[in-house]
Image 1 (tube, rainbow, N blue to C red):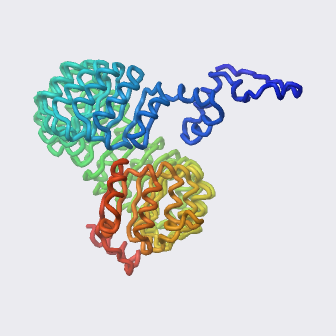
Image 2 (image 1 turned 180 degrees about the vertical axis):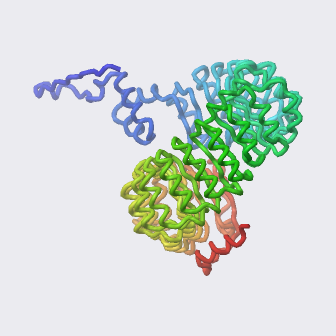
Amino acid sequence: MKRQKMTIEFDDNNSNKSNNNLFDLLSEEIVFAILDLLNTNPLDRKSFSLVCKSVYNLESKHRKTLKPLRQEHLPRILNRYPHISHLDLSLCPRINDNSLTVISNACKDSLRSIDLSRSRFFSYNGLMSLAWNCKNLVDVDLSNATELRDAAAAAVAEAKNLERLWLGRCKLITDMGIGCIAVGCKKLRLISLKWCLGVTDLGVDLIAVKCKEIRSLDLSYLPITNKCLPSILKLQYLEDLAMEGCFGIDDDSLTALKHGCKSLKRLDMSSCQNISYVGLSSLISGAGGLEQLTLAYGCPVTPALANGLKNLSALQSVKLDGCMVTSAGLKALGNCLISLRELSLSKCLGVTDEGLSSLVTKHRELRKLDITCCRKITDVSIAHITSSCGNLTSLRMESCTLVSREAFVLIGQRCQFLEELDLTDNEIDDEGLKSISRCSKLSSLKLGICLNITDEGLAYIGMHCSKLTELDLYRSAEITDAGILAIASGCHDLEMINMSYCRDITDSSLISLSKCVRLNTFESRGCPLITSLGIAAIAVGYVGLLSLASISCLQNMTVLHLKGLTPSGLAAALLACGGLTKVKLHVAFKSLLPHPLFEHLEARGCVFEWRDKQFQAELDPKCWKLQLEDMIP
């Protein structure tokens, strides 16, 4: 867009002749450009729209996406925004047929995408209204609609322009319903049938035969066999194939195939325990463009497996979570893979300094590395990782308990491009946090069960990691209100924080966090010093959990083992936080809170989960950690 120069002349003599708002002089193009820049924060858009009537009207015309918190406001919202093309209803779990009728009548041809993945109260009638009135629908997510049957699938089939359809966990839909979709939605490019247990080889075969444009196909945990494989592999444009947990497919069926799928770019064969490197080699034969391979909880990582991957020159991501690994296998992977950017070895048995160090030194362009629960690695591996892979953006190393606290300093010194760092259950201390604070792009930091860190180390993170959005301090027992204040003061974009079992946390931390307007997930289990004093008296200036009510996007709340919490204080907090979708409470409150309160909150879409768990206040955190390690073989 060319820069436009606008000159506004002010004439004192005529100042009383007109009351025009200066914003009225802005063209529609300029206002739209401003709104484009405000897309990251909905509160900014709302504030700007209230500047004047003309901006208010233009904002309603400009908005194309909508994610409402409560379904009862849909008629008014859709009247305000008549040009919505993407409607995300994942925060409205009680969408029913009437709601879908309102949506279809209001949006009509403008609606192209709708997410119903958290709703289960609609049926054939609502879907039919949607398909008939919204002719331009291309994306529909019906995941988790466990009550939908073949009739509902037939209604979906009326959306003739559909390109992407998610049916995960629609367990009552059978081959008949899938057949209707295959015949009616021939433009499909993506379909997810994960956990659709009523779908067999027949349904999958119909999709493969009728929907020639398929690019992405998820068949995870379906009761399928080798019978549908030939049709799948003939799909000319298939790029993404997931067959996780397909136990009916084995080496014999794969080796019998005459050809693999040459167009494949992403393949997930996790938990396919009847498939070894032999069958895998047949499946990926000729797939020279394969970029991502997931073999979690599958065959052992040996030189033979690595040798089967040597011709995949485009392979950038390999995920081997939970596999048995040998040093020879890791060395062979390092030699055979030439374009590796992402490697996941989470919970792999057999990962040692020798094998891991050999691999990372040959892949200096590695961007993401997951070595969670690789309990045999030491400072040697960390030294090789940080010296060889200085461009890492993600490092997950939970429970690498043999790594000393000195090694964590190397991470901050050498890997300053990190955006995600998981150090849960490690020996890091304040010096390590001081070094890691150099990673100014850090957005996710997990420090759960890090018993050596204090407020001093957390203060460095608050001062230098302003882009932090997620912080986990679960059972980091030395953290107090001072550390939380430092985070809240420096990390204004914080969206999630877990302070569970940080026993020195008080209401002061809640005051600090109430300033983080984007906070949507807050956990405070086992914080006995948080009381209901502020909750009950917030209207006259006290503070506490109710101060979080100012955070309009707060959706999840876990409140357990708060010693001073009263039923009235809790009820006030629950009513004030209007966007809640999930609340975990101690079972003792179930009989103390009024039943109409639950009915009211559930009608707003909130789901309650009850926990009956004793708080072991007398248990020292270090003792708890040692007991946990004794339980792990």
